[in-house]
Image: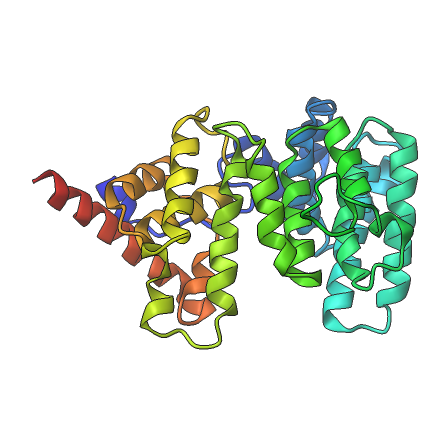
Length: 325
């Protein structure tokens, strides 16, 4: 761990997934063979397929690599769902930028999602994509965004889309994060209620038990003034207990089952709540890998994210050594 604390972090979208890392690196230089092999190998492993297609699409959206693949292998397994993923990323980016093309791209993305859901009914990814697009309908005009929740604490929303995902892949991580993001952007008071409902059924060890950590970071960012109380929020409730609960759940999980993003949030929460020995355990599990969030979100400025991460790793290690002295 001493060497890891001194090494610069590796911010790679594939994280600890070696096979995905190879495919990502190949896509970046215009090669798609390893991507096709990867998706074919996980065609019915819906959880891994969801996370892998999300990462691959983020990379492919920055180039024309899928167009080249489509010209050479138009019926390649996995190509259609990746193109749907990329269409969704383009639609979200256009809406965020206020592009005049936003409406057209959103409609094209929705049509691609429905076509993909019809082509492979057992696949949860098209429904995850529709859930991602739901945030663009903030007024909830579309019927699929007006479904009543089975929990009376939660408002009407795109619950039917979430149900379609979970019917195919119970516990799907991305779908829950998409729903959390939806409420954070459309109706913030529902976000915490949604997380509490998820926690009431999530088993120990599930990455879904990290969801409260995202609430804590969102709360920190929403405060208009970062005074001393806000800066030290992770030492107070409910943030301290959120970190503790997520740590206990992660401790009960299978090694390598939590993605780098969730581990990064957990490492930050434990460090910020002065649980240094526990933070060292998570930093050790991460090795050199890290995600830019939450460090870029809680640092004084996004370009100081790596500096904050390195400081946290070193302080955690020193704190552990002092505690054991």
